[in-house]
Length: 179
Length: 205
Image (cartoon, rainbow over all chains, first blue to last red; front, side, top):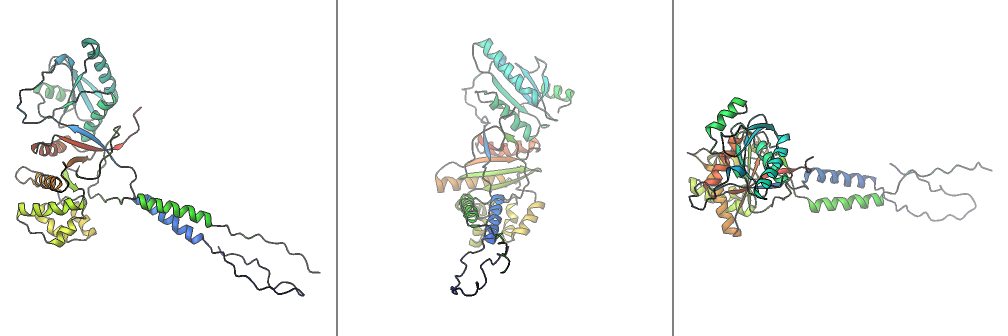
């Protein structure tokens, strides 16, 4: 925007002619434009929020030490991750109880229920989780289920077992159409 | 007697304060900026409610998506140390110029045999090349990924005397077996602890 020259031109007759002071005002509009342009550029090219890491520890594969803890079947909840974002879970030993098929929206409630049941039945012992991702699952399912465990505050480290999916489990999942 | 003229108000606004504020913001952004690395592999990471931030030193990042694996080593000095080691393994001589170029490469996914050619390209060509390349070979007969991991871990141990952390940055819709394959490679090297990179999510309903 050009500035209007508002200084009187020459003044009226009969008055003393003053020496005109030069106008020291600089038009900063362009400067501000430039600054904001740079600001937007920097805002768009920077990533202020750092990504977040979820720590996963898997059992050692060739650990043949004898210090293995036997898990009580009654305190174990196994979650199978299938396709179409479905999970199947059962308590106790495989094949003895019919797995329940649920979606990710309902699994949290089941985890909490089972956690409470185990705690009540054993006098406050922690539930043991076994997560078994199958070939039908996606990476997101795996992250989601680990997240659910974090939300439900399962303190014991979950056993992530993608090796030993039993035939009984496979058959059941095939029947249910989630493998 | 001449008519009294109506004095027009000047329409200019004083921009000095505005300028001050904008430059203050600008300096703030410049100082806090860390330039975002272009990601050759388009990965949508799943979200989680975890709150642990990813450290930005001594780390290797594995990007998994579309069945391919890309690897990124953080730290220029580590990259500089790792490349000659890899060259030794595969009998490829890398010139100092190539090593220098490699030290500024972010995430890459080319077989070591084509790495020389890849390093001599410019940015645009590299981008095109990575789209068609199948990532880093991970099959058991030609397991270059395991080698990269091994050598970069050695470099971190030598230069910074700490353990290298390994993070997995997987695409949300990636099949689990692909991820499992990479995890198995990690476990073969007795790396049983690793992090999965996720994006933040408000605590769920």
